[in-house]
Image (tube, rainbow, N blue to C red; front, side):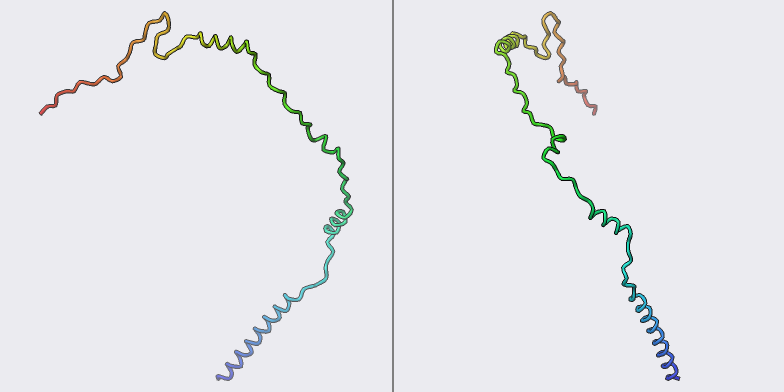
Length: 122
């Protein structure tokens, strides 16, 4: 009985191993012939035939602006400065909270008034 089961397991093992080997053998063998790719061939042919146009020294002139330094600033006139300084010195000083000439002074508010305390009931 034991020898029959041993034979059966051996035959089963050889069948399984043959199937695995044959599967591995099938996937390993592939065709080594290179098939032509028409798109790649067309691309390579056009790439080899391309001749770029030579760059001329004047090509950049149309795309670049010529540099021109800015104009020098004009200096202010001395007489104008003197008259502006005199008008500034003659201005009246305005202080916030003071009444201007001819107006009534605003009433001052007391911000620190304390409230009367109510006597606590015992």
